[in-house]
Length: 261
Length: 254
Image 1 (cartoon, rainbow over the protein chains, first blue to last red):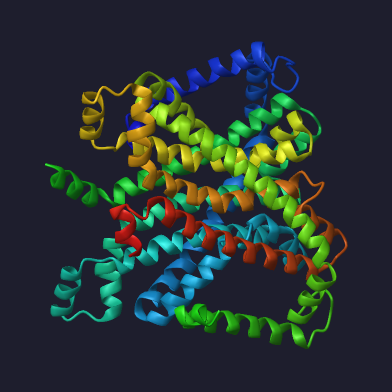
Image 2: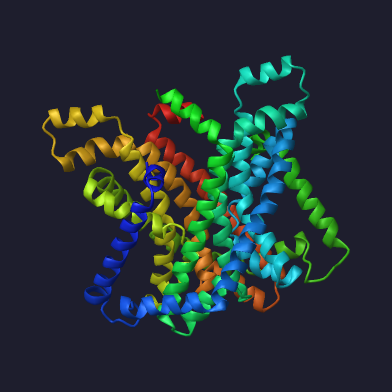
């Protein structure tokens, strides 16, 4: 239902932004009216525009999104390997189940100090932490998706003389794509969150570090503006993914529609 | 324990294998910077009392934050799901706020509430709110219209319908969201303590980092994993109590 609301176009976005700004101004004026911690729009919007004109903001946004996407890419590679192994060999499926149950409880932020110590600041640290954070939802969705292929399709592929590897590539993987994309959506959210957390804790540039600096130097309008820029970065990652999903899963949505009729 | 081992033998083999690799890799090094299993266990037992105290704080905040988020967001979700006017305004705002990662809220919470418990609880509430809220709205929207019609032919008011019809009918879906939030609450609690450090397990990680006590850091992460798994097992029991009657639950687990 929510997904349908998003798809219904730019009108919703305007409603959202307008509603948000009205509520914001109302709170700033009448609610938490101190004004310093909850700036009114007349000081917030100029700060936002100023940040958009600074090259540092764009560099930070590129860095943050680059780290998130690089970590996500590594997570996808590892997931592909793990899920293929899990589909070919049952004990692997069972043991990864346990590994993922345990690993999901590790807060990615808790790895930041360890990783800084092990590999130092820089891209490898971010990519490892982001990949670790986003791999588990992706793996869970991929493994269940691969396992849930329709038996008839598997029988047909066997009748056509496909090997098990071919079966994974040409039958199971396409059938699992909708499920994989669901996992990817969750994983993308996790990847941005892990990036921001790692940047805040390590102080190594990026939007997370900028947000932290603005907050602790009490540049309140800049802090909120950075927060919204992070939100925009997240939203554009979502949008890119929905676009990819639409291109790759056109056949699936077509099927859903004809099933509804 | 033996039942657990039998339940997932390959899992335990992998786990023991990974621990063995770690032990072999670090055994020869014999340095506090690359602690082996024994160093980590030693660090745990020396600091057990301190870890337990900080863990209690971390769990208390996670529990309070989770409870606030679940109660308010189920109520909000029931209302938003049923009242079209509110939904048309609120849902786009939710979609705007949702891409902001909850950790990024920590500095904002700090401005309003300092680095005390309430700031951390605010971060946990924010992080746990969205899964519950979104699942509740979706669940209420997908309740079969017949239920509502029956309720109105019984002469139930809108509020009565929400409590007696919508809530139980939406509960299985709502609990999917709550499950996500239960796991998130512990993670958010630790992360908020790391960023707004003053006490709790998250702060202990930072302290251990500053003292270069790598073994203690690994021990704390181990404690978090153990507690996280216990919470997840406990939640399975609660879920069975709450929606054991539901066919979807039976289909998944029975």
